[in-house]
Image (tube, rainbow, N blue to C red):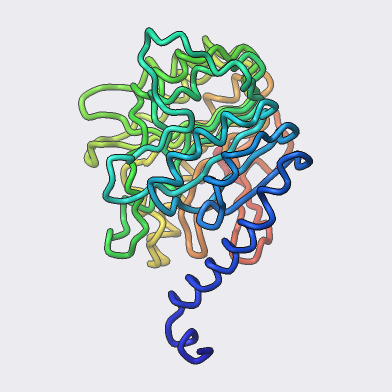
Length: 346
């Protein structure tokens, strides 16, 4: 048996997953009266049996991994209805392939004229990968919400350069910029301090309305992360225009931008000259231009731009002229060391 598993890693993984699922099915449902925080792999989590009990103390819940089947996906909304004290929810779970559930709603969908209000849920933190814009989760009381992430998992940038045969593409579409805006308008979040959006800009239109809405709607926003993708792969991104729109968010302290810039080699390039050339462009041209605009923000500490390199994707940090030196910092993921250099343009 051991030799068989060594020759078939997939079989070994399935066996390990089955053991984990068996253990969790015995242990987890018994915790409903005492547990306050849970972080669980969706593949091995007995959501169906968990949804049969009331979880009176659970306030922080995090799922990761991927759904097993439609029944598990549909049971999630019932389970969430049994959490009267839920304040923090994170669901970074890969969607199912080949089903109509390409975006799995957390609380389901109800007609606009339905008086239902999930009043028991009053979140302070919400993270959802590949959210459904019509999900009732966006109708909960968000007056205490501090952190919102409408994101992707796995990261969408892997779709741009990696073939589907490798199995890295997500079966669910990311939000369009219009869908992002519809969700933000639907939620009343006066205390929001941290926002992450992942979205696709449709051809021939702009996301100016979305980018202008953010400063207007969230006067206390301190941390903003945008992953903005182009449906038109030939489109050139006006990153200076985007930065000028964001300057209206006067409370911002940190800004992270993945702008899917034209000419970016993507996450799977291993040609060193190309990697070096793109980093030089980020360091000497794009980054200085963006930070030169954003440094008008009175509280800004840094702007970080996504950079794909050998060993993984990472962020390069640019600090405003009034900030501490060094003004350009490159993080290297492979050995976790910090490589620092200064840009002549800052």
